[in-house]
Image (cartoon, rainbow, N blue to C red; front, side, top):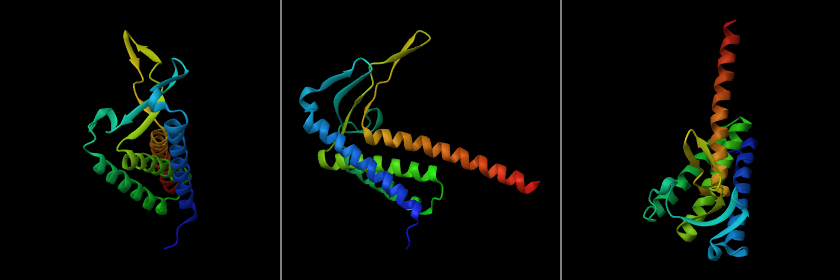
Length: 176
């Protein structure tokens, strides 16, 4: 099977995300010894480095680590499906989204398999804003892989909206 040239871009983005994710985690774990320190103010209160061992998924689900292998298998399956999708994709924004999500999934699964948890450390939980009289904080601590997944999902949505709009314009042009 011949791999389309554009698919290599998705695989390249995934590789870049995995390498950046693993390098930053190695720096956090070994170079900074953040695990022992627990917390380093960088630009307090806006941004800190904080050690978190995420044994579950979002919002603490499966936080006891019981789903380690299930989550690992799921992440690998998602990355495989995205890798296959990249073979069929023909739009740059879609390829970028696929690569970012695939790389993020693989970056986190490496941690989950190696350590039994995902290393999170980017902490923006200090800032808050008010919605009426309610104080709202950004409570999550995350990593490079998580960021790539979020950006990839946003790009995926943008690509979908854009493709739908282009399809409608194409249909309108055919009718006239």
